[in-house]
Amino acid sequence: MGSHLKLTVKCPACGGSLMNPYVLVDDLPSIHLAVRREGTAGNVYLSQLYGSHAKRFENVEDIPGAVTPFTCPHCGAGFRAHHPCECGAPMVWVHLTMGGTVNFCTRNGCTRHSLEFEDPDEAFILFQSQDETGLG
Image (cartoon, rainbow, N blue to C red):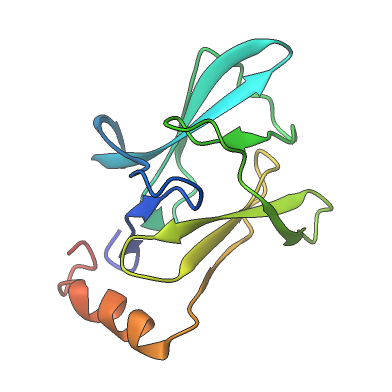
């Protein structure tokens, strides 16, 4: 895990933290996203390690290839589509706490994701905040 960046994120709509210290993924606090599939509300917890594709599902089935509309667990706002992924599913984004965004595909199993920064100093601060293990 040493080559991964540890990210903390927040909702682009309400600014609430999406970090969940109680549900661990990759032995670290997870990124908590709410989902609704076929009338059932549930949660998906993503790894906060950029480059890891580990996740946990709660109250919804883990369906490979399914496209899932994610919402904020605090305000219920849906995450806006940024652009289509190469696989055809929408790419959505959330804010990095330090500035910038992380974009990720909504198709379960697709590994496409990216970081974007309007200010190059934000990228420098993120990389500088990581210790030599990459885990801050």
